[in-house]
Length: 511
Image (cartoon, rainbow, N blue to C red; front, side):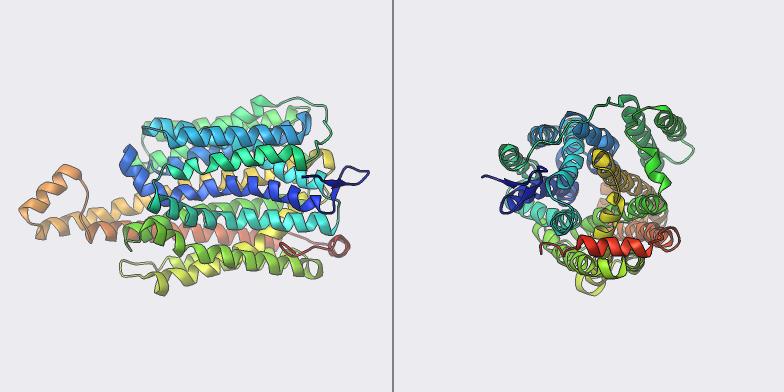
């Protein structure tokens, strides 16, 4: 599989398609694993004994290590060479997936998920940075960015569909096993189609990476603990205190470090800082929507895993449409209109989902708002990606891409933990009302079963779950609304920025 390169080492000609295929395949594998697990959550909960609130750790164990170490992963590629770091990350991801598939208890699964996050944190930022060092600036690079953004945005929905197929036809463990052959193929092809990048001297900011990751774990744990044991619980309060101390230390470390993993000067650019803020809010909303809608359609609407996966398939198609439209119109109108309109659409779709009730149906109550939300996502992703990396020197592209991805993953973990807290508080309140009503009309056998399990039978249990889900969407809509406010007031695109986009020839996805 030969590549065609110029004197600057950038890929041109037929080889560019193969290089982009390898990079996009890696990103798709990593993004899939954020959501493919969601479809299997009820089966994982039964097999390994998770509670409903602790079940969110199956998602968060991955996204926290992923988001917390992305910045270090990006720096590692800059220092050691992006291709070799990319290959190592892909292989580590494949090994962790294999271990996750063989997990026999909750602890083993969470450890494997955390290791997957480490592998993803190494591979993902280097894959995005490889675009900047592999493709020449202009139409070729913009087209690659469009494909990468489309994969990142639509991969989540594809993961839900693939997860449904694997769980329905095989077993929940295959959502992990499926990554192994993909990782091996990508690792085999990478040295044949990707050129190694130049190494940039530097050191690894392990202290900054550890304080950031542990601080976020403490913050997320505090929210999830609050959902289970209340805000006055000692461990809840202790977790929040630890999070404040560690994250404050992280900022101080980064300010004093000669080579920080988080180049704080990137936040000095108003547009870039605003872009990170919008991505943070969008991720908070995305993770919550997928997590709670997946539980709702399987537990309340009684969808099978495959039916649940198919239910989310339109999400991917609408995201692709939105991203394609944005790529074509971005040079003419600039990124701000797509950021504002996209965030407003996402907020509107989530606000619509707050009306979800016990008698809601997929076609009548779920599909419409889900498509509105997805269109908003599609409008935002391409413009956010281009804005975050615009004007970044080549030697900092790994750190810049790592910061963008870290914002997405950390925002998703933080948002999901907050929404789980809202869900836990709402379901506890609703259960306090439902239990007396249930006991007043329950048969002796039903009362005995409730005393043994503590679980309300349907339709009482569905009512409690649905109420918690609908309240969670209120918080998710607020997150998306804050993103719209940031886009409206923080982003300032100058006329020369639009002229530069025209000169670069922003291309539609896959065009």
